[in-house]
Image (cartoon, rainbow, N blue to C red; front, top):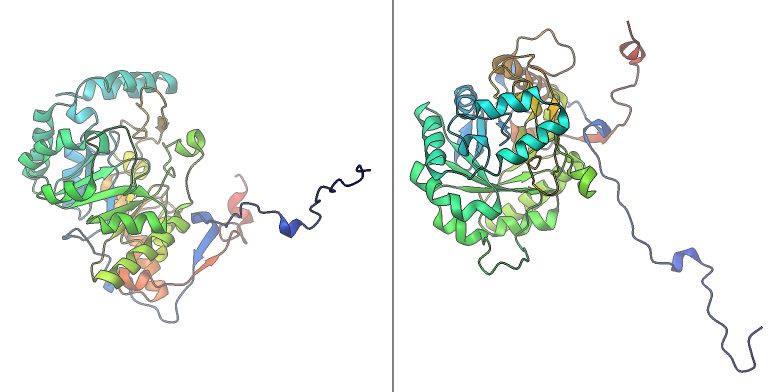
Length: 393
């Protein structure tokens, strides 16, 4: 009992009075489905082309800027087939005149040893003359050269990128925002970089509406969507950050549409990471993507430099690796992955064919119409009625 004249402490008995953090549900590829349309279109007449920063791609698929996925030869082969590969200018290709020795050692090592090998290899300096050489190799192959750098190294590498005549520059990090605080007095300012470069500048990665809108206002030519969904990325485990790709794409597509409404300029968004099958590709476009970027499926092709292995961009980080080497095998060709024909029933080959067929099934004649397709929350979409598929032979 309180002493005379004392005030009893107020007790909160109504839970509604307690302020708590509210969580919203977010959805990945296995949580949703694309709803068939009221009309259908023959897949042969469907247009799957897209335009990214003035470049028209017959196949709306980009290859990730990762050492196990893209080298100049791979970039040429994908470009000739209508897609676009992005070369990592901070990777092995621009640190070693002949990176094969490092690639062979990574493939021959165990998982922990592979990370240590990469960490050591990445202490070798980036060589501007190799940046120029690799870009020119790609352009000499008769295709467009798209290249990637991280914000800390952009200013240092940009002059070589300009000299070599790259067609697209991607400034890419785990999380990118227009506003960034640091101790550096001369940090990267996106709108200044964009004004200086002679080619379009695309940025990534992000997952939110507000951050996407602010980046578009900086003058970027394209935006990559996805934090941590890749098969070889461990950012979600190490840092606890990320948003499932369907929700992330929907949110960033809403920012793109709002920016276009305000300015008349359309900034394409590229869903980057976590895509395994043709169904995932189709769901990305239904969620609003203008193109997709994939890594692991390309790493498993005969043309990829990874020798059947794949690792994340942040795997070589000296202090906090946020990627791991995974074994994907060498089980297909670039041609079969994109166009088939295939005898596989799991959707891992003929991605362009899957997209055409899905668009035909929903009555979408082009990607803009595919973006308007209805989607539903359907967590049982892959298991309903599939008991025999899940039984072992």
